[in-house]
Length: 522
Image (tube, rainbow, N blue to C red; front, side, top):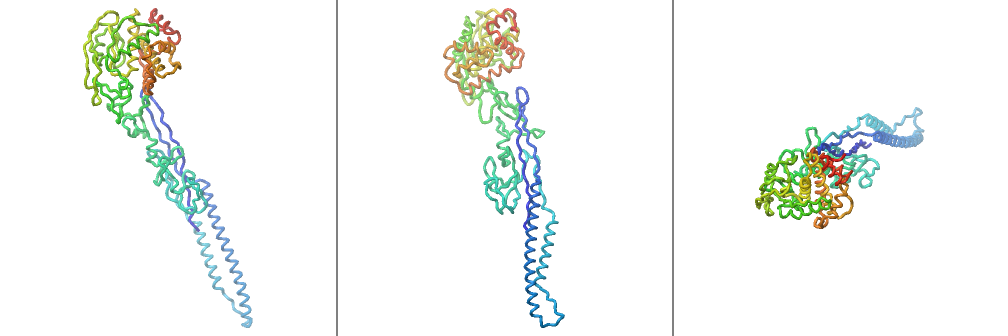
């Protein structure tokens, strides 16, 4: 009788995807699937019992055939002996067939061996599994030797009497059990399952363990053994939680963290600018003048023309902060102010010429003093330099609304109303630019889309310089997202209240109501 082999089956596992938690910075947890031990099914036990029964039946048939042959030989010998011994003594002599005796002894030994084989303990069963670094692992080895007709799940060929693996509810040639990622045979003692597909442990980790978009390493597990990471709510940039505290710089425009395989431009005031935002950045006052004219035409298209000639200057961060300290009025909630509408006479240092760039930093900054003279309620509009065109334009549209309100004699408004309606105009301008840049006439989904679309149709063709790059479109959507998701009372809540009023009553009626009551219409 040959040895009988027990069959072990690996169980399938599906991975649980991460989920986003938190507010602005997403906190995500990626959980590993539980592992389960292999177990011998009822079908496997029945198969073993059937094999033993068949083996015993075959032995019984063989013994019966041998007994029949021996009986025939005994009868023949008996006849011959009778003839030969007729002349012998009447008492006769009992003939003993030594050959028959030998067969009987062999039969007894064989029966004893069969009985011992039935009483032997079965080979031990091994349970594999447990919780590893990346789910449950199952051993494809040791090899088993096939004693029947089996079909390989890999090549659909007959396994025959050679070695085979039993896992995942099927049997395989050892060379047919392959990794779903690299297509190489799995000869390791452990393997991983994902979507019912086998993987080498290393291949599984490479494909399924999340990597940090900043340091490019595998995101480490936390104290609970779970993979925890942060993600930007708009760009979905995944990164290790440690990068929030280790000084990893962000782009001052799009807020993405600087990855190890890219270098951001360092501005003279310490800000960093990614290369994508640098492509459309505006660096000096002269370069910003065409954009200023576009904003003025945008307002004119809304029947809100600014008659006075208000100077617009691009300045460094230090000059902007100094001008803000000398200004009596204004509402500023952001840690860094990027635009300012001035009403006082001051001398401001403005950027005269686009600075030179060398070695990923600004090397030469050309500035000159500019004396502001009060000829009306607004002396100048200041904008922080080094920002991309769409962000610069939205800040300029916001500050232009401050100027328009003061020049039109609006009373002193609460921060929620004044900053809120200024944010509405910035959002409307971004809408018009995105529509114009896409080359589509599809209306925007924003609340002020009708006003923005009509303004875009009346503005100059210089604002529609063909289709924008995919990144610039996303950048425009990001700046709109920043306005919409602002959590501050003045800029965030104020925008949402103003946007709702413009949607319901229109821009003109909303502004008339603000002039009369100092608040948004309900």
